[in-house]
Image 1 (tube, rainbow, N blue to C red):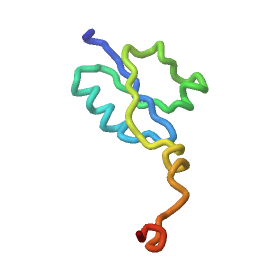
Image 2 (image 1 turned 90 degrees about the horizontal axis):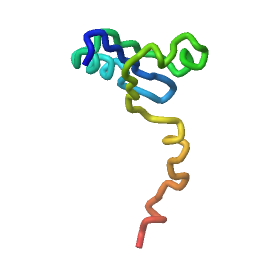
Image 3 (image 1 turned 135 degrees about the horizontal axis):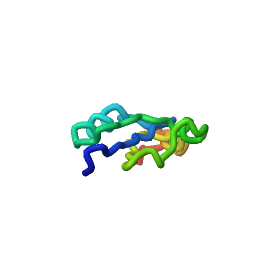
Image 4 (image 1 turned 180 degrees about the horizontal axis):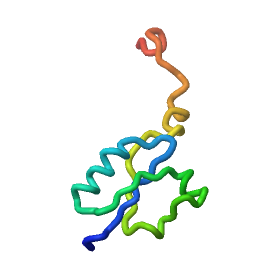
Length: 80
């Protein structure tokens, strides 16, 4: 890895662990690590071309909660 390698950690609605991900990049040897929101990229405040490495942290997206089952079993519906 280059001594001046930089990393971008992408954050946005539904992501989590971006602080831990940035820390992991730092201890891995990246000299510059920025946590950047998707909105900063869209607005042109930051660009991917400014970085050598992009990391996408995990998370929970809105669709995860929207797709949950609508039916909740009750005692009478599960009795056999």
